[in-house]
Image 1: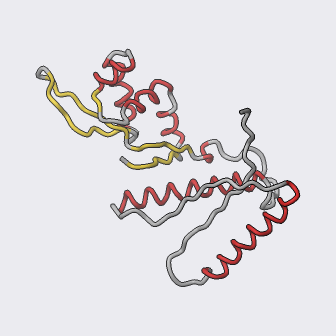
Image 2: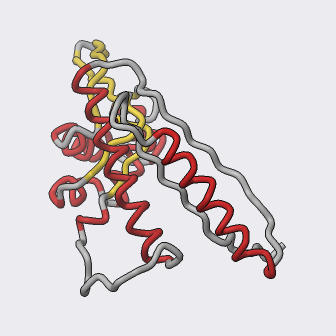
Length: 190
């Protein structure tokens, strides 16, 4: 099972984005037969099989084994991925792109879209070549900055990153892309 399946074709999204199919797909996080899924969802096996067949045709589900039950061959299926990402390009950009600076939310959204596409391409490359995991790093944390220090914090962060780019920015060696997202955390109602 792969980690991510990136959907960038409208036909695939249309196949997946039906509430009943999503529920069937969730049940197939573990290998199960259509009869087992039907019992869990209080549906008929025939109805579940219809959805499993559509999901399998689109590559969202694979048959992992087959077993004989009362003289009938029954397929056991499993989801092909742990998560499914929809490309923002399925809808496309609505309206013209406004000029955005590095401190705008629009710039951050464009950057996240780019990261999403890059990660999906890496995932496909690993699957296609049966290559080992690629070296990557994901770090997440929370920093609390007083309002009067926000500008100084942003300048320090930018300078630190520029120093890294300068130090490791040569033309030799493996290329790594570095994308940093810094945004205010939404306040909880707690």
